[in-house]
Image (tube, rainbow, N blue to C red; front, side, top):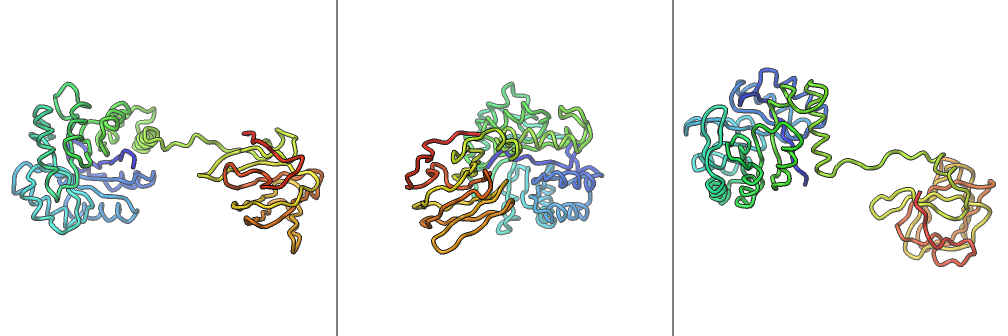
Length: 352
């Protein structure tokens, strides 16, 4: 699983009044992880936000900013009432765990010493890592919510890495992440995800357009790139690809899907009778007309039509036009003509 981007509908540790509108923008872009704080809006409004998040199949998060025992316990009960998937933050694990026990709610408390509002992380790397180790040892703790960039420590990535190693459970990095470099550092340090709220809402993420839609799109793009989830492939014109070569009965590899190769071939005249011992094959006619002979029948395959030839079935393809342009789909490393012997048999494959 790649690094997780959690969009927080918050500014300065409070859920923003316009959260419902911002949520629609995020959902329209396919953002799959969305959170809010337990202050800023009434619980009834937070329940509506959560319902909208869940209705789109996204994961919902509530981050606690309570600073005393009673309010933190109340926040945990609010998380259950609202129905979020994951409870972030808080430090009083012994008070929260009995409240959420058996609920299915995932719990990611803050390691280290948290003070002030907006919250600040205090302590040395060793102290924060030891806190992470202690918290993660609880069965009801599923991960940690690390306010890494709210710490005055000089080497934040090293601190994140130390916490991830100490915890042995997923770590979400929160607070003051506003550019690709910090996201990359979070990923390199071994964190499972990160949150961005204020930076996107205030147009601080580096991109030309400061609007929320463009901000979120830029973050999602950068995360996809860092996770290796951007496609290197563009579209291919079959007309141009077929016009680029004249050789017949000599397939060119145009692409691969898992273990299946997409090959382009020009057929001319009739090939020999043959079969594949183990692999099925698909023949799609792009231009021309193809006659596929079987021992029991013959099939004429027109442009835009395809035929599947199962393995073990003898067949003989014949071009009914001067040449016939064929898209072939079959397992990689499969010889073009199986065990058949023919002077035109292809010994190797050329990539388009």
